[in-house]
Length: 426
Image (cartoon, rainbow, N blue to C red; front, side, top):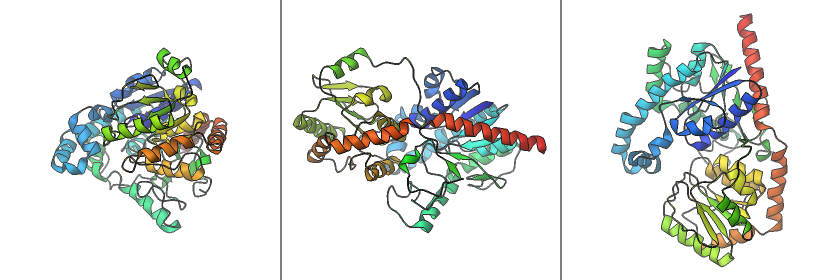
């Protein structure tokens, strides 16, 4: 089986697919990931074939214009529109051709919903495609609304389900490019936005959410419609922490780990002052991972500052973890069995922050805007609570039994076999 994977976005939009591809290769399959060049090293160092997509969000974020439209698009409407028309949209149009070239000869296409145009390619080539959104945002369910509408409010069964109609409009801003691609490359007529949100020619597109069922005990609407095999963890055998990180950890009590990855803090100076004062009051040691947050802490005896570090190696050694709530970081925090506090910024982060707190797997969340030294001190002290520690260990034990990538591959193999049978029969 040749598995081709299309994804666009940040590391959280790429790493789960690297884990899936790596596991597929170990099972004797061929796997190729087509995405932005920023992730070529990550993909290839894990033994997976890389094909470049012209669209590259991380490269765009390194430019002033890119940062502007991602962090404050409404403040600069004219500049944002110009950047979209001159850079983002043309890059996406070229990416559709990149995807098409990569898909030729594939047995199946795995795609992130951001990889618009994938169902069109699958239809044109006559091969199955499987939607694997990193977060549970696509299939209409009754138990909670689309997390893009609200992070934790319940509108009731009918309204909850209606909020997912938003997914049918997700490609509206790019339908011009999709239709140009359909006409010029695929030789297909134009179509309306959202036609392939859930099905192709009346046949449902299989959906796999790479998350744990344990986080959704109340959801019944996914049964026989959506598969939740567990998180897609990337296995990195032989990887180790830097000597200075290991030395810092061994030099004293387990440190608090703070990381916001690629999320920019709006008021870095204020945030740093609150964190510094809170840590001083509780007496906690800390490892602070700067990433692209805009923070500029300085290392000292009880505080180690890092630009980046493998979460799966560091988190299990922490006293507690403070993070932004991105699904990848959240999954690693759950797997570590350590208490966690989520300070969400946007997108799916508030959803995870409130859901984990409600289930008892994270502390009551804070936001940067409402963060105070007193509130942070309270949360840091809660990391010592035996019940909080017990809950963190309880979810770790559940997740340790799940086989996310392996079960997902088994399902994908079944989809390919059934598709081949139908095609042969036809």
